[in-house]
Length: 59
Image 1 (cartoon, rainbow, N blue to C red):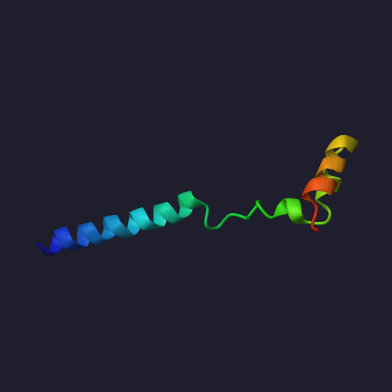
Image 2 (image 1 turned 90 degrees about the horizontal axis):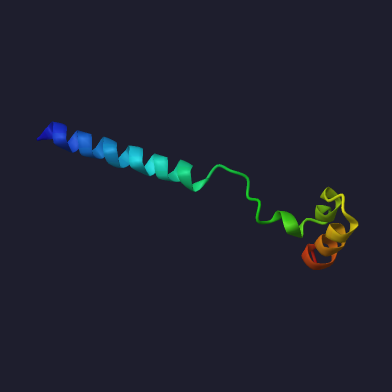
């Protein structure tokens, strides 16, 4: 009975850790990049720069 409890605990911990890694908890947040003031400079096409600067730049 003790072995089953330990095995179940290990499975729960491993699945939680795998869920955190699969969720991307340790990755850089890219959803804030469009609001950086230099975001438009990463594009070569002037049209894309204009769209990125005018619509997505920080207000």
